[in-house]
Image (cartoon, rainbow, N blue to C red):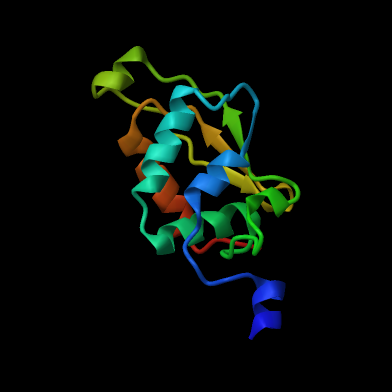
Length: 134
């Protein structure tokens, strides 16, 4: 059992504080970017199963690294996909319609710059539960 745990990781929930601490931002995103703040807000509201599905979508494994995300190579990365949405998206207008995508070999989530948490949550849940894979 211990060897299995070391090789394949635990079956515990994703430690969001550790993931956030070791996440890299690219394409114009920074830790304080609006879409990044929305991302962490949305993901913190996910169930443990949804967080594992997100991890599987981005890394091809639903299990966190045994010794923490600092040992994930390449690191978990949130990459900005610039999409235009009207200023009115903040107050109920049409938000970005594009879905997030991932490059699992590089542990990159390509995240459009959504304006509303509800849009980000709906689009993220759609892709992590789609069952698509390679």
